[in-house]
Image (tube, rainbow, N blue to C red; front, side, top):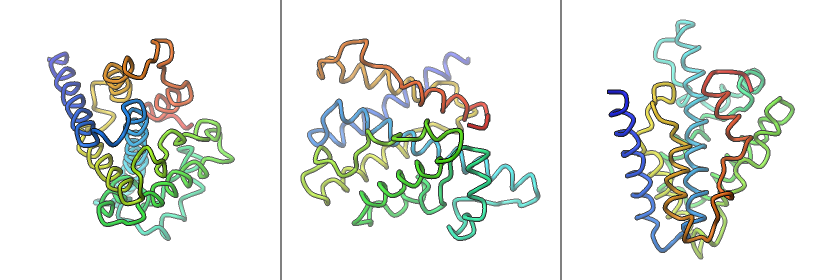
Length: 223
């Protein structure tokens, strides 16, 4: 039964990635597409990871129905220092993946919104043990690149498609997921684009920093 569930989850993930590729066909080169999908997946992952961590703690403390995503940035700032120490990073509620997604379609400055969020996440880790892991973590998802579109409007339109595609991935709760979503997505993207990009097998690997970061987050270890 476990194997069937794993295959179903993997097939669903592959269909979701293919759907994004179909949406962006002709707009983003395959090799660059890989970086954008993985980068956005990671942004969603750490947003949900932090939100789940905070919500679980608040609910255990008696705050039934608490949702960090609905908290004001001003109120959330009070926990920045503690969260940066315990989790190794911090994200304001307004810059969580889910909240950026809500406004994405109507955000004329979506590229700047995402760039600011990525920069703030990396900066939040400075001075912590995870600083090296987060430094330059989002460099491969250049939201201002002409590779996304010739104009800001076209780039933002493609970013909306990317965000929606990643949001619609049935990843569930990372603790309950029976597949390595990032590893499987990476392998699938490689099979889609590697040969066309002229890359050799030895050139695809998950950076050690990302692997270590994901592993520690998955087991709840402070980074």
